[in-house]
Image (cartoon, rainbow, N blue to C red):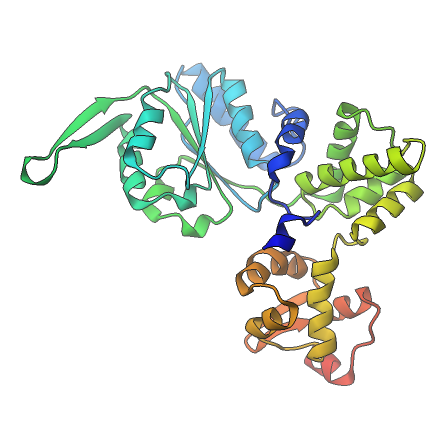
Length: 341
């Protein structure tokens, strides 16, 4: 996993990127680029709730990492004029942890639970009455003498975020009145995000250089902003500080990110399938052994983007490199592979 932590194209937020994320985070739906359907529905839900002086119905945001789920939670709180408390599924280990948070929230405040699919069953059961009846059921004592104490809670909103909605239990998922899927961004939207970020960071960048960065950002704003920051640093050290197309190209090549957004690990997986296994089909465990990567990491982290770009196919017999992968790596497909494809 060490290689994963240092990947420039990892969509997960690194520990040292919190300040950058806060600096570049949009503060209103008007500033938030992309996800138009989600924004339109949220605008209606928030406006209706404000007119009734009620909290917005519970919101579930799901989709790949780096697309803006946390940002949208902050925007909801800001536009509703309420406070937001942030936690995560793994951080809520005991019922007392959740109870302490819930009892300290004010009327219409928002509790944002990241990685909500990782809540344990005990926490889920405490959350149900809090979401449905704005009440907290506490069990006092043990054994036959145990009794349940119900505390009234303020009318709050739970905003959950997950990258794996399928892992959410049905009862929990059903308690969210607003469920939105965040999709990958179009290249034009990524470019618009980069333009805004460049202004905030005071980066002197040419339009063609922004286009080059956007094309390598894997349709993910977090990656786009990370690449912009690295290209800015390169321009400051190696040039006059102005980011030109040539400077951005040099910086991105140094980072190992090619024109499709693939890095060294992505290309190694593809080249392993092509060169060692004649393009496939080959089993996931064999790929993992040949590349030195964990099976789960390949399946959950690397494969989705390779498949989305059309470089890799999953078949009943195993993984198969596509003609697009051969073309990208500048390798001529063997005749046997052409017949399979």
